[in-house]
Length: 377
Image 1 (cartoon, rainbow, N blue to C red):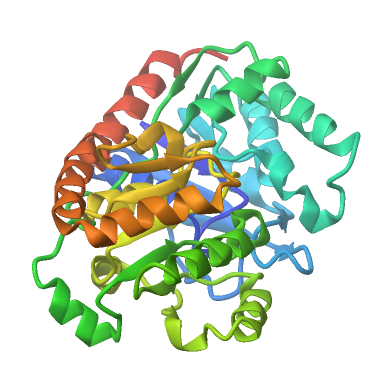
Image 2 (image 1 turned 180 degrees about the vertical axis):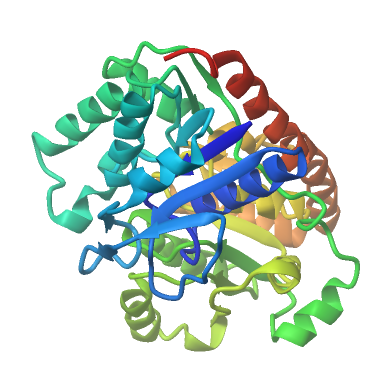
């Protein structure tokens, strides 16, 4: 098949959505399909003959969260590519282009909704009524134009249904390269290599306001009263400077490390140098960083809301906590550091729980959807 993947976010942006598109495209190509990606031309993007890039800019103050794309020339390119299926990954401007191309070329449109878009309206200073309602209604309208809809978690699918989406749908996880993300044996050597302390809490992913990171610092401060731990951030984002100021104000500089944006084996080493992953965000849909941490054998202590609640098994692979309860977050983290046997056992089960999300399994699921709907317009 010839498959067109369309998204307002793609490399070199750092996000779970971007990783999922890149991994899916690679796996589909391994299976013999021709895949072309339609995405904005972003700073630092490398030339790739399999990607059609078009002009774009990011909303000031959003970091890379809100990309405004102008798909000039993309329709001509897609008409030449002549896809059998178009797969849209966001309901933004590129998503509207995908819908337009689907209608003009009489090609079925499959949609994947990765996010709860109303959670990002604060970047445009529109996070007040009626805008959250309108953006949710628009998302439902948009995905009703698709022949089939997938989401990586139940929370997104429920929201689409609540606002009127009635198309056939299914929950399909983002692909997780479990051969890369894996437990490494020499944890102490990795800690020494990366300058990470004996007891380290990991916060992993985009450093942004919607990740509730001020609360995470409050949790860390409480854990510090009970155990000698440090906090390690992997990633970057528009909230980095604010967070740095708060860390300085609280005198935590010596106990907090920022390792920046990492990829590949170095990222896997950094995850393995930590002991437990903390997620205080309440805006996650699936959270690939959750799955990547679990795959590396880290227990996850997460807010009991959204995506992580679907993938963390309370008491088996980590703990789920009411989002505002600092004391319970700190209690579970302290229990893990004081009980190494508990941490090791949870880490083993965590790894096993992620094997069903391998790229091979996920590509087959999408391949089946494409085959079943390629003749529907």
